[in-house]
View 1 (cartoon, helix red, strand yellow):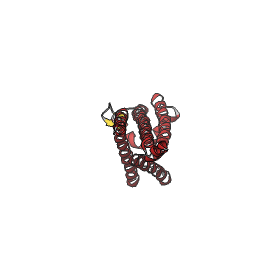
View 2: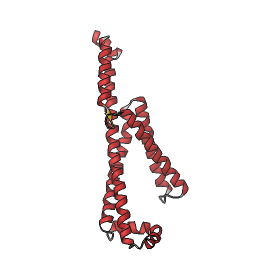
View 3: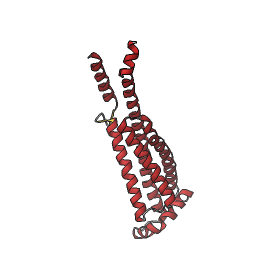
View 4: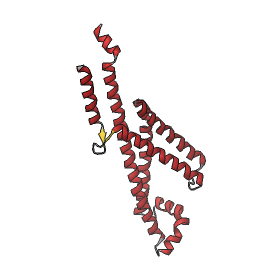
Length: 198
């Protein structure tokens, strides 16, 4: 009876230790939320591609959608069955994504600071058709519009990179939580009790 009580106390301490969002949500709940947010972005990217808004070639878009889908399904399954190994693909993908987002943020910062830089000229070519009319209506020089758009993109990309860093933190903490629960199961499993008694 006391071992059951100590197990419950240990689990309660673990549950208290593995909380986030100012202690309001358990780590597994937040991981489920991250899974649903990732799934939302996967579906919205797919819908944007179907509607013709995305100019990325289908082979690349399909590759990204499949890889992202596998990582999100793996994360959901890993949390559902409490197996930390299934969380790893999402962590690896988030680390790679964060690296690319940091590179993109650097490029956007370069375009914002110097519209004549390679990044600024590349961004100008991309948005020339869409924003040249708006620039004329607002009596702005197109270079200043490039700097403004690059600054806004820099902020959003930086926020996305920070979100992915937080996703990695939450996923790793969730995997640690499941490993702690596994240790508890190994200690109190019937096989270990029989081994100790013999």
